[in-house]
Length: 171
Image 1 (cartoon, rainbow, N blue to C red):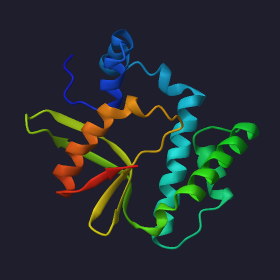
Image 2: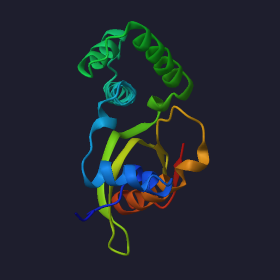
Image 3: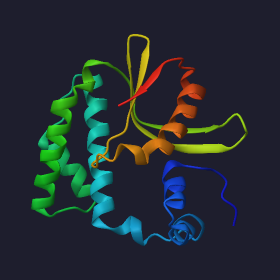
Image 4: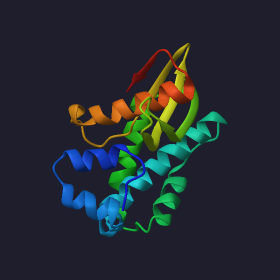
């Protein structure tokens, strides 16, 4: 089977030395990793942040009830996990204040090509403008910055192609 595009997650998995797991996940479509509570929690928090920023564009208020409803759709019912996740969520949104900027799109989906004709696909968690500058936000629960260099390269190509941005920053 041939891989028809590159994404950050597939390139990171391959380059981190997990070629067997890469093969199982990307080529054989092995789903066990995606069925874990860890994965569901990450997807749920991303969905909460997406909804929070979408609602902030229309001045709606995202509540704890909204948060809990999203977690329930991902099958997460453990009250301790939900409480810990909500605390992380509140800390994140209260310390960043991205909603004060011109939010272009949370969870921006892209599908484009490099200058060499290589197809790249992915999702950018949040794109916003401040004056003439474009900002790319990726929600992370860890702080190991250097492991995201490949992701920044992929996002840079997408931002240049899709937004024709001359100046853009990662945060």
